[in-house]
Image 1: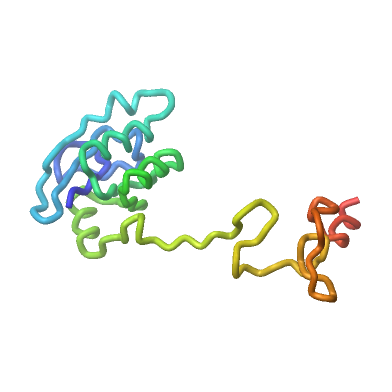
Image 2: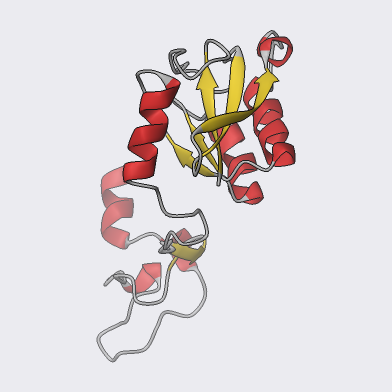
Length: 165
């Protein structure tokens, strides 16, 4: 499995760079052999004013990385990694070799294996099985068990509206 590590240098003894998009180098390591298979010079990308993380994530996807070990992957770069199926391991520290050893001891689940529980299927409506409002104005059941028709009061509970005034 190819794993990428953000690094300050080109060797396994180099420290892990805590900045993913602005790291000087991205080392691709084959976890079965523990050898560096590719070194991506990221200094040009790191110098960009914006989008360094997105560009670095794209380069890793093209190189075939299945995981990234780094200090922090930013939210925009994380979206690219998720779409590419790259697992993200934040909080990596020490040398590149130490980060790989720790990864091999406890590999993370792939991004597609992680269960996501939706909290809402549409604005103002709880997801199936989620706790429902008891307020009729917010779409909760009334005393006779019927739901309120329409979205009167913008879906807010009357008690909430009184205190907001």
